[in-house]
Length: 270
Image (cartoon, rainbow, N blue to C red; front, top):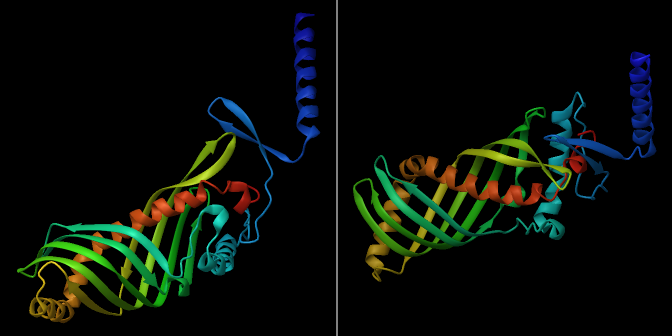
């Protein structure tokens, strides 16, 4: 009798749970630790082309999603606090390279970048179960100007300079490798980028600086000539530091976006 009573109690409880779950088919239960949260559906904004976790061609879907959002990124997405990327304005980038023939500490400020809106994506690799995304991008040309403050040595040439700079990079190839983790806030799941690695190569490059610190046109002309004559060696030496600095900026930038986009917005069956 006791066994029958326990069994009937369990069946009633199970039946009640099923009825409750069926009352609203437009919610998703999310496990967070020992608690369960009910996650509502969200409207899909016009700039998002959602993908499906179970899509056998998920990489092609994300490729189309990135192509779809490009014109919106160029103009900016105010509701996500995303400024226009054409031109892209970066308040500050810090770089430091303490090894090799190029040992400098540089701070670039008030950076305006023209050309990033013309990016094209050649390849997308996705492992959605681990939130791993690899993007291969190319840009025909990037023009940058802003202010700089550099101290150090370049190929045994001592440098201490402050002023304005201009740079032109052509045939830019870049690979971005992103690792995401799932987070729950107020019962809603989001993806946060835990790691972002960027590597790049340049087909051609040119620099021009206007040295305010030395106040000597001869020194400025000599440094411009020196930089452009040794541009390949300088870029190769500074590439790891530049990649790390750029990755840090875009990791913070992208996390600001993803923390406002629930997973279900851009992956409907998440």
